[in-house]
Structure formats: C-alpha cells, structure tokens
Image 1 (tube, each protein chain N blue to C red):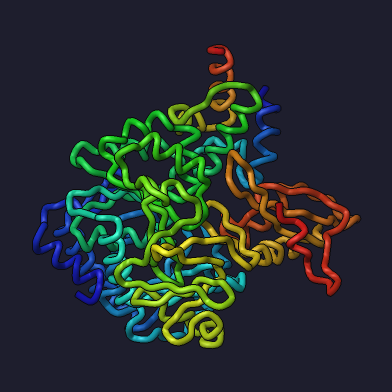
Image 2 (cartoon, helix red, strand yellow):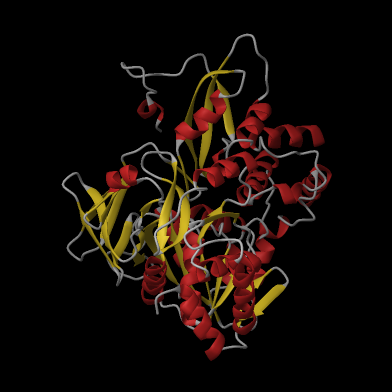
Length: 74
Length: 443
C-alpha cells in the first residue's frame, strides 16, 4: 500500500520529497488537491477538505493511515 | 490623496484601534501599523536612495507589508519576487536593476510574464495604485466593516491590489499562506468580529473549494459579501455551482493585468443576460476605459496603466503608445459596453492564474545534460485545471529520472513554472521553418 501510494504521488508531484517528515510544509494548494484527488480516484474513497489537515498530510505514513481509515469506512 | 501611504496615515488618525491586518497569530491596528511603517522607513532611509530598486522576497506577512509601505515613504521602489524564487534567479534580478534609478512617480516594479513570453519588470506608479484601489472600492463595493481574506501570493497583482481598497476604506485584511490549509481559510472567513467577509480567488482555487469543501463554503453563505475572481477563464459549470452554494453573494469576474491595472469587472451572479456567462468581464471601472483594435485585441486607457517596463523603452513601445496599453487578449464589446474575452494570440500558458512562457521552461530544461530537445505544453485536466507538461527527447547515452529533471528546472525557475507532467517522446514536431509547432500540440 505504502509503495503504491508513493509511486502514484511521485508521478504527479515530481518536486515533492515524499520521504519527508514535513510533507505538508512542502506542498502548495494544488499539491494538496492533487493528493486528495489522486487518492480518491485510485481507492474509490471520499476525501474532503476536513481530511486535508497538516496532521493527515504530515508524511507518507500518515497519508497511508488516512487512506486505510477511509477504506475501512467504506 | 496621492499615495496609499497617505490613506494609511489617515486611517491611523481616524481609526487608530481598528484592526488593519491579521496574519497567522498576529494582528495589528492601524495605529500600530503606521508606527511600524514610520520606524521601518527611518531604518531604510539610511540604506536606500530615492528611485533605487529594492528587490525582496514577498512573504505572506505583516512585516512584508510594513517594508513595502516604508520603501514607498522614502521614495524607493519595491520589487517583490515570488517567495520561493531560486537565489540565482533573484541575484539576476538584483544585478539587472542595480544601476537603474526609477522615475519619480514609480512605487513598485512587479514581475510578470507578458506577451513576448519573458519575465518583465512592470513599473507601477503611486497614482496607479490609488486608481486601482479606487476602482475596486467602487466596483466591488468595499466597505469599512469588511474583512477581506487573501491567500494568493502578495507579489502578484491579484492579491497585492486587494491591499489598496482595504487601506483606502479603513477595512481589515487577513493574509493567508496559500489555500492548502482549507481549515485555516474557513477559520479566517468565520471570524466572529466581522459580519461581512470577502475574498479573491483565482478560478483554480474556486475549483479546489468546489471539489473538496462545498459544504463548508455553503455554510459561509450568510456572511460572504462577495468573491472576486480573475487572472484566468472560469468554467460556466463552476460559476453555476458557486451561485447555487452562495445565493446572496456577489460574484465578480475581473479583467486586470500588471500592465493595464484593474480595468473592468462583471457580477455573474446577477439575473439577466450576463448570468454565469463565461468570458464576460463587464463594463469599465471609474478610472479605466477600453476599446477593441482593428486586429481584435483589447486596448486599455486610464490612470491604472503601468508607467512602462523598467529600463526597457524599446519593449515598452511594443505594447504602450499614446497613453494606451495594447494587450494580446482577443475581445469584443457588446451593446451594453461590456467586455468579452475570447482567448489570446500568444503562447503563454495560464496555470492557476500564473502566466507561464513555455520558452522559459524549455530553456531551463535544455540546460539539463540529458535533454536533447523538448517542448512545454498545456495539459488541461478537468479535475485539476491547466498543468504544465514537458515532452522530452532524451539523449541516448544519458539516463535520468523525471524527478531529477524537475528538480533541475526548480533550481532555475519559480516552482509554478516547473512542469508536473513529463513524457518521453522520439521527436518534437516543428514547422517548415524549424520553429516548434506549438499549435499542433494544443488540445
């Protein structure tokens, strides 16, 4: 799951260091939207503004955790 | 009054305890803001002479605006650049204007990508700033009790120009660092001390809100006085969606550029033949006029025009003659005097309100050791808006990843100019005379 998400995001965010522990700080608004849209489409989950928090986008692990939590709710 | 700083001084006298600017956890009253500006002006007066160009990174902060106003007070010229501009690019700008003294009336030099596709320094006078501000006060109906939230980069005319009507009316400005923290955006709009709020959003930001936060946006309906947009075309479906979510909010689409200033606006929420009409930019504002040239291009006149390109009379003459700025926008004027836009004639790509010259991106990419040939094109995505895509012909003997190429480009250009998408191709199509065949790549 983690590798798959990393690969997906690397393709659309070439400038972002996905191994960073300060991922949210590296993103701009388009980057945040891109992550939410790509993950929604790929996993068929509903991601909204309330999910796009600095905590959920802190690093790749927190993104994976967000996706897994959403998948459980499905 | 002849400058925005004169309005600021008046505000400090008339409404000393009114909050002028909010940013992060900081807020300043008009009295405190004016005191800081005066102190900063005293400090800077020893370092800069009148007419000297002072290059600075435009931080989304109160302190940036303090320096900006202070430079004006000492008759120096503010040249704010993108906050994330690579140091080498910034050094080039510093060097370019190191021996240049701007004419007396000039307040700012704003960098823009214009019709010829190169970054250019546009000289903006104090008179222009006041005319832009007055245009917005009258056309948008900016009032003293308003909280105006801006989240775009403050070196760009879209957000910088909102500082002016706020100061001229003694209203309150809230500066945000982009729109990525949507929670912070809605928190700013929900400020309990204000009954009326407004914001400026480029169409790409409106798209983000419609996709990710339509419920929160709808909850703002009772307090949202108006939303202004501009800098890029807005799709009809987004206009309709916004009208449905915010039924009592005025929704403006504004025609402006760094060279022309703020020219016209249209409230597409009003019932009638202009309701949610794409491309309608409304009638001219009080300090502006426009007409259509024989070639079908929009030409603008009035107090909001630039003073010219800094240190480049030849370039200025290509777009500005007889107190008129001639744009590359194709337009028409209807029988009600409203301006309608119908695209541009040049190669500039509009990405989220930023104008990007593809040649600049290609030059940066070609300087990378593995790139034999390339072309930068626009990839329109229904979800994410326009994105830059680089088609690359690789040198056969060199291996590299697209991330390495992207990072190389980012060392030379601002991040919004770095393509998000990359595709390896065998050849780049050219016209019979060897020029890149850009038209054949347009979708």
